[in-house]
Structure formats: structure tokens, C-alpha cells
Length: 417
Image (cartoon, rainbow, N blue to C red; front, side, top):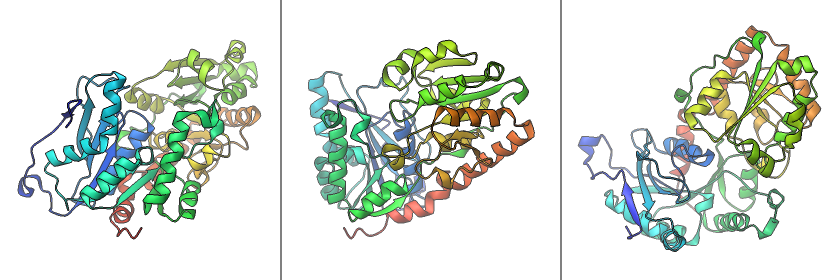
């Protein structure tokens, strides 16, 4: 370690007899997030790490905790993986920059402290955002194993106010450029994104956002006769059309609006006005109950899903939405909360109208209004059938256990790149 970092959760190396581990190599996943449940990327990487390890082994995760996020009083843990959390001491920019530049060396030293030697790692899994020359060169050469990148998004410059002048966007495109030149294989969150990477010569496995269905209890909202409970959970930015959802509700008749409540978790009213497409003046004329909760813990989101009749998601149909895959959809289905959405990305393969949710004809306010009117006409028995279908879909298509054989086989394949 450098002087700028500490290791949290480090344990001495134990022999195979005491741990049940075999001597065969295992995957190493490197992150730089509030892992394991800080955001959608953290959740994706956790399930990817679980599914990447062959039966009888566990993925080693070395996570470099982001300085911008407060470190919890109790170090985070993650079932199903061996987690080492690095933490940069101090929050000054002069402290953070050298530590970030030295990240590949710090990660390598962390693996050494865990007793990992050359030959103990079969593959390094890197999220696309961490695909840098330093990470690839040091880890590839030192561990003598292939690097597989995970692509979960491809941004469009129109998402950002300053376009190509946005540093984050430039870094994103640079990481993608490096991945298409240096990596031989990748996992991708959607078929559209996989097609882009395949066109650049990579071997790609499409892996949608995964969940652990055991984390979710079955939804049990009150009877529909007491009112329709809708939920939006996430950070809308410019990718989710929050304004369309609110305007769709505003076009319902006054009596229908009084039967509808919308909970918005993840953003305050002020932040929504400043950083999303929402025109908050529309809220003043609503008879429906609209609540903004701001950022909430993951446990609260799970509770909200269990108490809601539908989660809502409206997105544009091209660019970012076509390349990504909204992780909130598998989570909603796992909770037995059907989704009210328009089809983007690969969603048409997983969410069928009237089965796992209600599908909008488009992404305009009237499309939202018509879908809500359909939801208001549902009986409790019809909603219960949709809830059961949602949970069944999540277990078959998104649970990390259902992906283990495919992912572990793919990442362990010979790298011919």
C-alpha cells in the first residue's frame, strides 16, 4: 500500500483445507465504487462477481472506495465474494490524484497481501470506466492473465450540457477506445452495446443487470381500491423522462388523479428541477399525491418496491437508452412489482404487456395517461397474477445463479486477442 491508503477487511491467507477452497485460479474484479450497494454500477459488479466464479470458488474483489462518498462506520461486506476495500486517506485533491494514478499498483499490492501469487488469478474483470493504460498494463503483465471488460453503458454527447467538453464523457470514450484495442473479450449489458463491441473485434457475452432474488420479499401493497401506488426510484438526469410521467398523470381526470400517488425516490424536488427534464410547475396543478424522498438507503428502496403497485420508467428510444439496460427493471420484477414502461434496449424480451407489466405505446404524456388508466381498471386478482409473473421472470432471467455457468465459462475461456 502507499501512504495514502489503508486496507479494510484484510484477512490472513488460509490454506485450502480450512477454507474449502481449491487450488484452481479464480477471477479478480477491480472496482472503484461504493461497493457493494452504492449505486447501479456497484450492484451490477457484485452480481457479476458472484456469477463469474466457477462452482466451489469465489471471486476476489478489490474495491477502491471513492473519496467523494462518505466511508461507512462499519466497513461494507458482500456475501458470495472475498472483498478487500482500499480507502484513500484524506480528501484533498493532492492526496487523491496520486492515489488514483497509482491504483493498479495499489490493487496489485492488495492482492499480494491476500496471498495471491502469479497463477492464482484466472482473469481480471474491469468495468469499462476503469479501463486505463495503467490498469491494463500493470494487471495484465503482473498477473499474466487476460483482462475482460464489462460494458454497462455507452453515453451520447447530447446527454451532457457541454457535449465533448464534458471531462466525464471524454474519459468514457477514451476507456471505450482502449477496450476495443486492448481487450479480447467483454461482457455487455445489452445486445446493441454488444453489437458495437463485436464490430470492433471483441468476443462479447450479453449479460443484463443481475439481481439476487433472495434479497427481495414479495410485494404486498394495499388493495387497488384504496388507490394506485406508483414508484420512480433512481436519478433521472437526462436519461429518464420524469417530466413525461408527471404530465401523463396531469392529463388524467381529477377523480382519477385522486386515486393515484407517485413516490419519487432518489432525488429531491429541487434537484429534479435543476438536473432533470421535470417542469415542477406542473406539480402545482395536480390532484394526485406526489412525494419526493431524495436519496434513500437501498433498504428503503426495497421496502418501497414491496409497497407499490407499479414502478415507472419512461426513456428516449435511441442513444444511451438503446445501449444501456435499466437495472431498476430487474429489481422491480424481483420484488414482484410490475413495471409500467416503454420498450427500449432489450426490454421487449423480458417485459410483455399485461404479463410482467404494462407497456406504453410510446414515450409521450398521453401514452403514460393511457397506461395508468389501464392500471386503474385492474382487479386485485389481475395485479396479483402480474406480480407473480414478474417474480418468475426475475428468477429465470436476472438472478445471478441463472447466469453462473454462462458467465464463469465465458470469462475463463482462452484469450486469443
